Image (cartoon, rainbow, N blue to C red; front, side):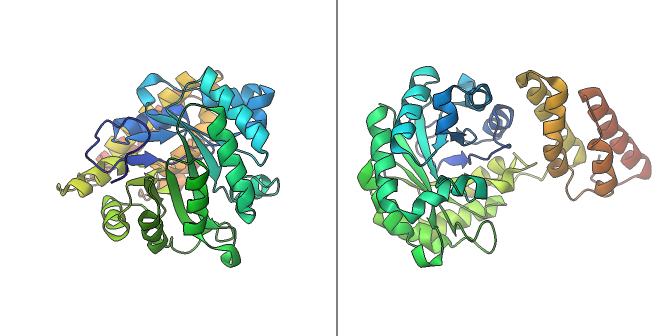
Length: 335
């Protein structure tokens, strides 16, 4: 197995990564996922322009605690010079364990400026960005890619080789194209092909929703690490389940509503403590409330009430009321 370019807590095991996700992988969620077994986390992807210009909002995305290490700061942009400046700044000011370059984001407002997966239309540009960033920081530089911009340009091995040759010391592949967005199934065979072709570690990403999925990905692809994204929304215990599956241990039980709500409240409390404006933090947290309550009996009505809360006391009261009502009804397994 190729060596990862940063220290890992369990060097002999397949590392589990929390994917960089805009509006989701903030510091409170990263710390929660670390507690449940994530080995490596990444920040939300951050604009190189915002970093260089000293945007206060951008600086908020870059904050992290030492307990989150190893952590990578992920940057995006289409100008090699600005990307290099941004990498040098985050290295000096924040000192993460590595700098990751986003060549995967499919969102229109990013792609239209040639950022994210938009860069995959020009592999010469990809190489120039990786080289520029690698020359600007002593930290390991890694890349996250998709399989291509569209079907006509689909070439994950070719893209990965370009990244490796330019200086990327780890490549994460989400085996969909930009035009696929998040539809269909991720083509894990492309992760296997990339892992066979590269000398640097390859991390697989895409369609990991259960611990068993993580085990299947490792067995089918031979990837060196596994990254989880949407499957962890409202379910940070996915990392614990994945680690058990990879070790061949019995699967941990899925948390009941009481345990799920306890994790939700812990997450919300950390979010409020991290955010300078408590009410804004609670408003921003509503998306997580939707995920934590997904699949529960009466979940739609519960979410309608939760989406109207403005503070932690209101959040706790609604969740406690739901559990009390479930207990009164004798709903097995909920409380």
